[in-house]
Structure formats: structure tokens, C-alpha cells
Image (tube, rainbow, N blue to C red; front, top):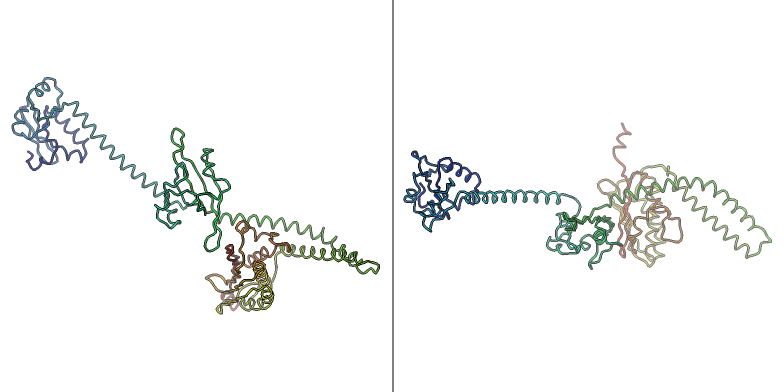
Length: 493
């Protein structure tokens, strides 16, 4: 029997009335369907089995519940009961209980008891669903946070209402400072709420109800350009209404670089075929033009105006011949002998020659050579040509004077030669074109200088790196393969 200390904290102190089969059925159903929170409010203290001669005791997790031959006896022994549950459903017994029980005791018939037990069941199901929902939410959040793309969740106006961890990490600000901002402020350099896209993919997606995308770029503090593709995807309800919008941004810098290199390789292949044709079909007529022009220049009866025109023909023929030579040299493998080169000595010799052009243009040249530089595997004449190309480009970017820095150093894998200027920098819109053949921002020249430089360095296993910030300057770096000690060991063996 329950003591007073055990039932004082119960809201409902219950006595159950029924025969043994009904009582056992009710008790098992009650225990199976109830949850811990409900049981804290309920306490069953006794049971009455009218008409039974043998009165077994019920059991509740090791606690015995006394049984009685009649409900009146049960109530006499347990005045604390404030609720009676009638489990048999017999009309005569229910009628008798209604007339006998005082107002302080609530009578719950069998059908009503089943109804309340089902409510307990629904509560238990709700808790299970809540736990499953939380598990699903945590799983989805973990998946979204692990995706290396930046993902924003937007409302119908393009304002941020959620994001993954990648966005927070890359923005470097707390999440609360990103919430409510227009997505363009997060995914582009826009600071006034207007997108820099020629066509806003968000507006396009909302108007067409279909995914949209756009390309954007960003120049970092280090002067390097990164390319991004922004994807906008509307999310629909079951009735077809746009519920939310997902915006994602993917870094495609590496892919863009590979595409540019592939396009350049295809262009070089076409140029190679064209140069062979030009060498045969153009240089021969050009040679004839130059020969006849020279012959006419020596003719004594030629007046001054005619000689002036012939002089122009000769000058232009020479210029065209130089362009053809540059083209042929560019398309052919260098085939130059690769040997040991003292890079510091080569830089010092070259800059001694280039100091005069620098001085004439009011450019102060600073040369900083690393005394611990390793020797490199290259052709000295070609490396000298590359350095001269870089210095000339730097001078053309500083027509009103400036500073030129030529430095050498070692990194973990390469010998490094860099040329940095304080010129105007390279505009973003042409930055991915400057290494393309025949691209030039000047009226003179064939536009092969930087393309030839990259080709020479690539053929010896090196790389060319570009960093540029508009109005601040440009830095071009050559990474050259160092001379390995293993080569000497192999020869000595």
C-alpha cells in the first residue's frame, strides 16, 4: 500500500474497479502507453474486484497495490482517493457508482479512460517525433556545414536568413552581422546594396521561377584575382509557391585558369600552323618588295618625294619582317641549351644595361640579390630576354616615373626572380589576357613579350606568377628550377 509520503506529490490518486481480466487488461495498457511525465502526475493506490473470493495483489515495478472485494471497502481504507476508474464497462455498476461517490471523487468510465490513455500515447509519439526532427535537423546542418561552397538561405527580398559555417569563416564576422544583409553584399564587392552583376541572378530566378547563375570576380588584398560562380535556386512548397531561396557561391579560379591555358594551347597550335604558311607565302613576296624598293632608292633620277615614300615602304617591310621573325620564334620550341646559370650575376649584368632606360624615365631601380641563391638550370640568354621583357613592361607602366624592384630569393622548391613596379596596375578586365599571344595595350609591338616569357619558363619546368593592384603596381615572379646536387653525384658515379 502506498504511504502518504508517496502520494502527496501526485495530482491524481486513483482507485480502479473491475474484474480480474478487465483490471489486468487496463493495467497493462496503462503501463505500456504512459510516459514518465504522465506517471509523475498519477498514482494508483488500490483496486476493487467485486464478487471475487480470491483477491490477488497488483504489482507496479516492485510496489504492491492492495485489492479489495468491493469498492466501498477500498474507499474506507483509502480516503485519499480522488478519482475512480471503472474498468468493466458494466452499466449497472456505473449507475451505482454515480449515486454513491461523493462530489470530491471523479468517476472515469472505461471509454473515457481509454480516451485519456490514447492522449498519453499521442504525447509519447510527439516526443519521439520531436527527437527524430532534432536528429534530422542536426544531420542536415552538419552536411551543409561540411560542403566547401558558401551557402546562403534567403527570403523573398534576397535578404540573408541563414547560412552555413563556410560563409561565417570566410566573412570573418559573427553570424548575427550577416543576417539581414542583401546577398550581394556577402557574395560580391557591393557595399551599397546594388549587385555588380550585369543581370542579377536572384531577380532572374524569382521572375522565371527557375535556377539562375552569374559570374563574379574579386581582387584580394594580395592583388590576386579569384573567380566565383553564384547560383540562385528557388525552393517551392507543395502548392508551387516559392518558400525560400538558396544562394551558393563556388570558387572557380582553378577551373578558369585551366580553361585559359587550354584556350592558349589551342591558340598556339593554330598559330603554329599559320606561321608555317606565313613564312612561305608572305616572306618571299616581302623579300621581293624590299629588294625592288632598295633598287629604286639607288636610282639617280628618283625625286625626293618618291624617295620618302620608298623609305616608308622599306621601314614598314622591316617592321613586318620583325613581326614574322617574332612569330616564328614564338611558335617553335626554343631548343636552347640548358646549363648552369648564376642568376644573381645574370640579373646584375642585365640591370646594368637597363639602368639607363630607367634613369631616362625617372624610374629608380632597386636590385636586391640573395647571396644564398642556388644556381638554376636554364639558358642564360633566354632568362635575360625574359628579364628584359619584364623590365620593359614595368617601365611602360611608369611613364611619369616611379620605383622598380628586382629581387632574387629562394623558396622551398624554386629559385625566385621577381620584378615589381609602382605603376598603374593591370585592369581586372584584361588580367586574364595579358599572357595571350598578340594581346597588347600598346600601339607598337606584336604582343608576344609576356606570352614568350611564360613559354620559355614553362619549357624549363618553371612557372610565372602575376600579382597586380590597380593604382598601386604589378609584380611578376619567375619560379625557376634550381640546380640539384644529385646531378653531380650521378655523374661522379
